[in-house]
Amino acid sequence: MTESKLNVVVPKDYNGTPIEVVLREGNAPKALDPKAPEKVSISGTVETPFRWLEKRVELINQKASNILVSRDNMRIRLTIEETSFYQASIVGELEVSKEMREFGINTDKKWDPIKLSQFIKMHRAFFADKSQNMVLVSTLKNFKAKVNQDIERSKEENGSKTDNYSQVVDSNLPKSFKLHIPLFKGFACEEIEVEIYADVDGRDVSLSLVSAGANEAIEEYKNKVIDEQLDAIKGIAPDIVIIEV
Image (cartoon, rainbow, N blue to C red):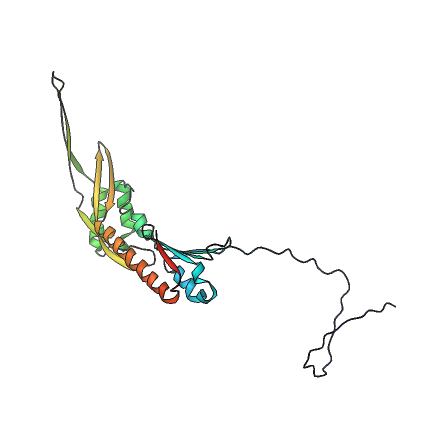
């Protein structure tokens, strides 16, 4: 019979209640290898950095953190423990709405008249005036354009040259139409006026959608929204440096 000794530490305030000791025989399970901390990288809407700080500001060193603001990219980036390999990065972006991208407003997107007609028909929910939608669909389906071209070329004996080209397009397209869509992801709808630009080259016709009003509103909104977020962050984390890039 093998005798074993077991040392038991009795608590200072022990009241005499029996203490249960469990002995297990066999090999102890292998300890897991220690793992390095994981980097935190979060991306979300423009208010994400503020929302993160709102619940964790007391856990961080504000003097070792920074916020980079890019108004051109409509982005706010919060970095925690900036000198650490395991620094945390919290990014908030103001994103142009899916509807603006799908219409291709103020982009290089080119539309065939028939395809634009079909697209607008399926997205009439963004027209406050449904009758305007129907008229536009019909006009695009039956697109007509009269093209007048003037070409003048001449060459003189003394080497002087004349090479003039002009093209005038007269089409049945309306000058503009109005949409009721959100400019940014997650924001309410805005009414914007959209113009149709036609590019006619022989039989090839491509259309572009342009809105000066939407472009102006986006510029105003992005600065207003970003400033609101920075003010909110300053209110709860005044010692974090904010840098415009």
